Image (tube, rainbow, N blue to C red; front, side, top):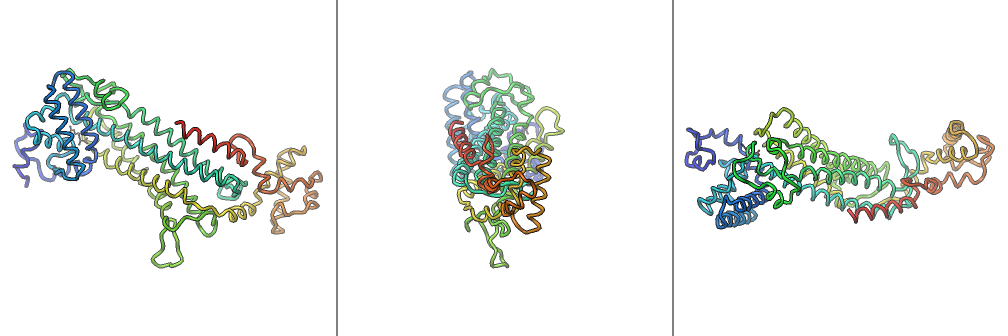
Length: 466
Ligand code: ARG
């Protein structure tokens, strides 16, 4: 049974002859989740009231009463003392009803020249913009932490992998800078997305604009948008800006998931490349010896959840005719959850990166295991005048012989080496050692520690100047 006395508080009840079904009221309400938009809803309403005064639709006294009323509602909400009512459907009508209760009849003038359709579109754009700034800051923090660790480990040799097989030695600092680059593109993507988010839909009203002499440029400016949106139908209906952010967030999560996979591998007994402090790990209820890398594992797992939300948003939009449809109310839960998740995961990384302790000895031992300097030997032969394909063949035979003898390539004697190619001299051993291999890759983007340090300097500069 619907409570009739409560039903009279409805804002659109005029043309209805019976109260809303109780199920329908619950099914259509969004206040349980969209209430978190309240700071943006109030900010948008204040800008709208200022504009109404500027164009003469509200007197100064009326506008002031509305603005003060909204500000006091904001502090009631902040204190947790606001009574959210499901009968009032959403955050917009809850706040507007509270305003009228608080300041009387004049509160009913606030909705002049706008609709909940442009109101909610404005709220979400303000919210998304705010979230982009928070996420971008977290990414910047992780990038700075990566540079510190990369600097510390610029000379640390680890095996570089392809196909998860030992490929060539690399600097651990260089590996960390690869993560840095991935996050840098993530940051740039957010900033680029922000440009398209930052337009004001306010004034598009329900779909066609309004008959009042509104000033959309003024509200846009008050809200810090770069300009009003160009088309009223588009303004109230599309959520591509949220999809774009969800897509950027999914790429961020994909990167974090890849980092996580490496952390999981590196902390395993088989690799034992790094150590994560106990505070980031948990134990097993049955196996007393276990220390599990749960934080990176959960980040990896939550990636699926964020990508799922991106799919929800795309699917939500795909069949909607212009202009606003109630479907769009379904944008909020996936959007909120994916942003909360990305922020949590980035916060986890912000704490984890500086806490990584590197097991340099084991990285080095692993780098010596897989004949990782075989390419260096081939390059050496090419510099002696052998063609690369022939050099590849010669070194392949040398590796086969080393494997047979259970030796590393640098452990073969000069005699044996000469057996594969007579021109090989004693200097070959400098080429075959790990440092020699790293130092030889001394060009822009290469793994030589001097290049790694230069890349760190450049990255630090860019980070400080963006
Ligand atoms: N709660 C709605 C939403 O999130 C607000 C807009 C409702 N507009 C309407 N005409 N029913 O989209």
